[in-house]
Amino acid sequence: MEYYENEIKPQRAFLISVDTGEFDAESSMAELYDLALSAGAEVVGSMIQKLEKPVSATYIGSGRLEELIGICGSSEVDLIIADSELSPNQIRNIEDAADVRVIDRTMLILDIFALRANSKEGKLQVEIAQLRYMLPRLTGKGVQMSRLGGGIGTRGPGETKLETDRRHIRRKIEALHEQLTDIERHREQLRKRRKKDGIITAAIVGYTNAGKSTLMNYLTDAGVLEKDQLFATLDPTSRALKLPNGVTIMLIDTVGLVRRLPHHLVKAFRSTLEEAASADIILNVCDASSEEALLHLDVTRELLQSLGCGETPIITVFNKSDLVENVDFIPKVSDSVHISAKKGEGIDELLSAIENDLPIRVKRVKLLLPFSKAAISAEIRREGTLISEEYTAEGIEVEGIIDEMLYSKVREYVK
Image 1 (tube, rainbow, N blue to C red):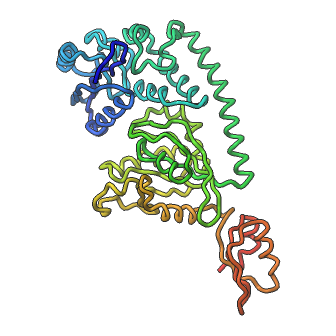
Image 2: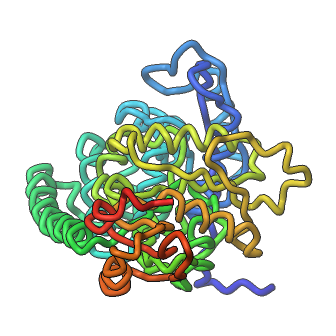
Image 3: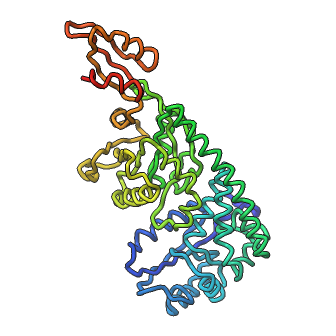
């Protein structure tokens, strides 16, 4: 393969982490590796140091810092990525010592968000989050280098000269926030309209790269980008899905999650995630082939709890089950289904589970009506969906899909 002078080569990144025992440092580092690849970096190495707490001045200890300086000099490292949120002082000190630009986990995730956001709302959310994160971090070599060459951690507003004026940044944040508020207000109006019109919504949530977009595309031909990388899709997508029982619901794909997603990032994307909070049913999609499937489910559950989804029916969807040699190794979780969105396996079971969790305002029912109530059949045909009708010796056997108001009229006739 020939390389031309103007061809952009990936930045060579070195990953660092401090293991305080607070979380699984090895697993978190593996995820940081995937995040770096998703941002377009070439990871040339990593180091994890066990400490009671990160060093306040340099994050890692002096011995490891010397080792890092040597690695940066011999391996032509362009970028150091820390698996924690660094203080401005830590970033500046590591940069001064290694003469290499430094970013942290949050800056990396924000950079990927900036790369993936397509909608106006998504771009506004990213820019506000980036500017707020940049504000206390305006000094140091990172800013100087970002002006010179760009690269990972500098996309979006990082490529502008906003960082030269703190007051200007604050004014910019206020202006962006006003635009975002208008969009959020419009989104809330759409939610209320869907509720008023009786539209049932099912939100697809879960860990990033679990196959949510693949499932969305299989069920609705939505055309959502499918890619084997973290945060391949960022903006929510809504499509209609007609269930086997005749009920049409609105399926909504949401942004993927990662462990240790900083609170202010969750806050920045709260309006997007509230699509899940307002949904009638939640599909918690998980990669069944991952050794950390249960941990991924916990990450999602914690976020759903924080959004107030405790009472919403949640169906656990173990995707990529075809990659698991023995299904007995898939964790046992109540109200769960095993599928392969890529191959279309288990989809009937999933649709059946969704039908069983439909809110009472549209329910599939079997009735035995007295002959004197034959007019109810006509009402179901007119107001709902009449699936079958049969006259028997005991009465009229009717099966149909009805709303909450009609259900209150026929409750006593439900078989």
